[in-house]
Length: 441
Image (cartoon, rainbow, N blue to C red):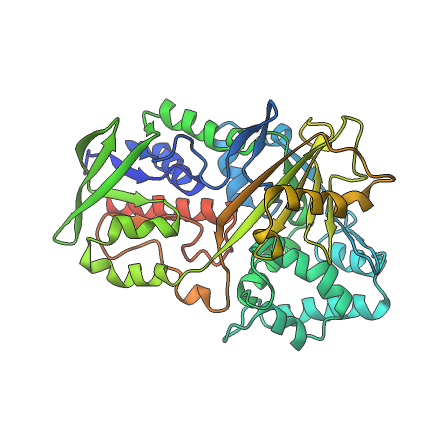
């Protein structure tokens, strides 16, 4: 039984999930993170003396692994997440859609919501129900993957359903345009959110910043269990001898050191994987797989108004606009007057400077107020490679957590969890990597 530490490269949600699981099992874990802050692409940042996030994230009730892990590290779920039953309001120049799910068992809650939705005609509701039945008959998996847009075409979805329900949901969960998004991944999310328990479709809005929601608590837990976490520390090289991990080279405080280990979990973003495995000939196929990935941006625009400015609900969608989702942070995280607006995927907004984009977003969301409020401050965050693109057949090239090198495992939302790039996908991959590591020790 090896007494050497397990080295985890990356302190994002996947890496920290793996570390928590391993320390639970009594393993000595050392986490190295090259950035000055943990959390990866889901972390808190400062704006106007407030803690906000590098992008507005939400969870849903179906994110069971995320929720369980938060509880494990001592996060008070009831206090840290505001749970809202499914309520989707999408504003459009032509018509508004309001879909509200009652307290009925799944899938009855969705059936009722579709038939009682404001803005849908009977033909729209029937088309949506037929869509769900078709997915059920297909067992939420197609032998040959197609685009989400083609899936809608084959199931005869109406224009209003696509524009104001399915497309916004696809962008929100997959951050990939429906024309190129994977139908199989979309169906996986649909199944988990809408077909098991009614509460799985609940929206969970963080009442605290993302760093406080999990990464900070995870680090405290890991340290209490005897693990170590080092920020601003870069793993420069992984030494492999006879197809087995032997050591890692660390750059810390401008000094190099060699750490002997038989187990390494790489939990970096996929675009950073090449730097760590390019010198390992046995991983050329893996390297080529990840090199085929494409990426999609997410832009979040924070708009600070007077404290008495509010939306009529915590989250409102917009269609036929640059703006896609507006969040009233005063309603769930005690930041009155602060509205965050999320724009997923590529589009005209990526060519705009921050001032032009802010003005466009401000004008678009003015329809959500009785009269246009006065903007006090604004802040634009652009994550140009926020997620991998969940494109058609992407699951065919997403790598498994195993690498073929004994003791070397991958963790990250890009691994083949069947989920899109979400917090739940990241956590699941981290737990899988941890379990594989336990088998190797």
